[in-house]
Length: 225
Length: 225
Image (tube, rainbow over the protein chains, first blue to last red):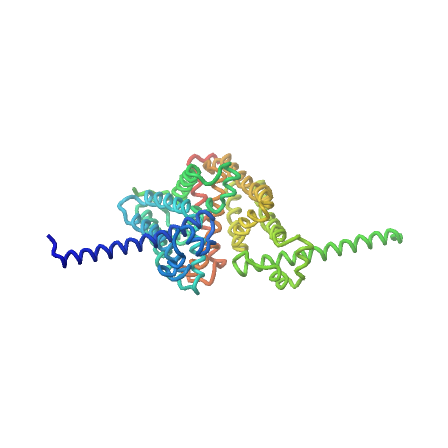
């Protein structure tokens, strides 16, 4: 049985944990509201009162958790894009073939743009925000890590003899451009494909054809394996 | 020798021609100012007084020539993008091999984004403007023609046995996405390539590698020619 002192300690610890959890929930709710607003509007234009309305929380909490709107958007970037980059890094280090890694990476990238089609506009915006305060963070904590992870996959493929040598940074641009393009042209998709929006079926066809083109494009004649 | 009546007629015709030319010049100056402002700011945010200042002309001329700001931006779209699309259509009908046509098309597309990096933002914006008044014009007079011209090049390549079969609309998205990506990420280019901006040299390397990847990607095993 626990002593009273120990019970008190556990009680305090639990209260603290509950407080932290409530804290995390409110913070998460705000970030969820940010994501939902951008997805609905297909744009990064929203006000703090929009966030308050969407989350059902007081706009003052934004100041409490993030300092200001830019801080909140940066927290969103780190949560959504940061975790995607971590996944690509883990993928790059997995013991599977480079072609398979690149295929998984392209499927993941298209899926991310499907869920967050405004994400590159947000990154561009944040790099210009707060006198460039966030620019180095975005470059070092996000883009550099992504480019390096892609570079590792490409180099693995070269070592395996299945990929030709390409400049990894230029390749990074093609891939993000091609993965994202369909989500920046939803009107065109609706018009030509007679669809309400870029749906799961279109996304699948888009990714499959892109993967095939990229794999074929990177393919080299002399294969070792 | 010309009769007096004939001379008068010629005189009137010349005056009219001069008037038309002066007209065209002021109109062109306004559109040039629009292009220069968007290029400088890497954005489509500008006011009519910005245009007046840049062109050295009265802002009232915008109303005279284009009705309003949206009308002027639409005239800009038709002038810049419309003429680029006409070139792609002419290319598609030229008596050269499909691979050569596609290569020229990709070089042209990258060069256009190099000159007008804001052009897709402008198209997206115009499609939402004026209650969708311009949407059909952009779809029918620009995007549809571009997609069809690209489709013709792809089909020619299939008929020649040098391209595998792909969905031309999905392909259209990859190409514009990949051609444009580097110009939407100038901060990244500057950071990684230690360059002041996307310069001629980077543009050339970017295009060459993209062309090689696309040609290889579209390449089919059984070649007829």
